[in-house]
Length: 176
Image (cartoon, rainbow, N blue to C red; front, top):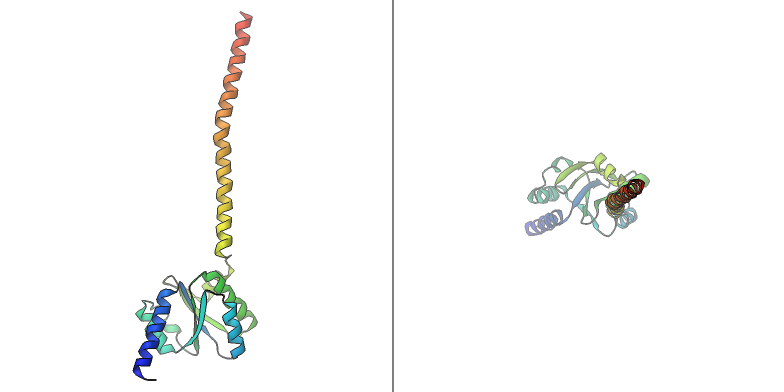
């Protein structure tokens, strides 16, 4: 490959590293073209799965400021560039790897932090962003209704106490 082609490939990979929230490195040795196509579909719309050259990808990652992946660029490597929810794509990779043991998750990076293969599997065990946000909203709504009930209870308790004091005073005033 000519030098301008290599520099263009490095520039494209650097852009992908910079524009993605996460990147997961995998070894795809032994997978068929049909299986790779199925893997690309299982990753979701927010991820691109690209078979890459190790040397060019290592240079691109370093230019993007990612140096923690240097030791993982060996053997046939493909990178999943994730621009959306990393949990969805991690689940897709994990589930595909269960069905196809030839896919090996090497590691990755999430928002500049290096992830091991085990951490990526733990990320896949998380619920999706939407589910977590809805649980948070439900918890906050519950706390707000508890606070509203508490604030409402204080004035009503005060009114009942004042009424009881008036009744007691009227009772004592009528006895004298």
